[in-house]
Image (tube, rainbow, N blue to C red; front, side, top):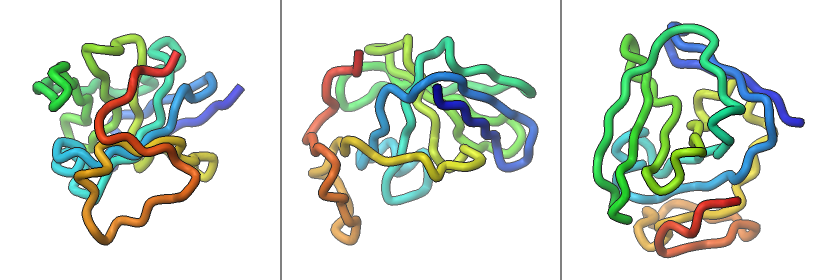
Length: 139
């Protein structure tokens, strides 16, 4: 079993995960770039029941995604750090932003999505499967 912990920039929100990641994905969609302020988002997907918020309370923001699903982002109300997210298509999963994990050395992306929107300077590992759109949720 994999266990890891993390939190927001200011420390107001802390969480832990006990369970194997279901999927690790890099997303190049416009929403992920805007939400993270980066070239792409790296997300570790875990089962909702494996994620525990240890301290603090998050706020949420929902918006329609390119897929037609509703995406919900969870973030620290103090510093604004985005921590988790989920889709109306797979509410039993939570995506955790890899930048919020204390020790993310175990993270190895398996897939990349919205690769047609990847910025030209982004390098893509040969080991990832690439999708033009969002693939089916992992089981």
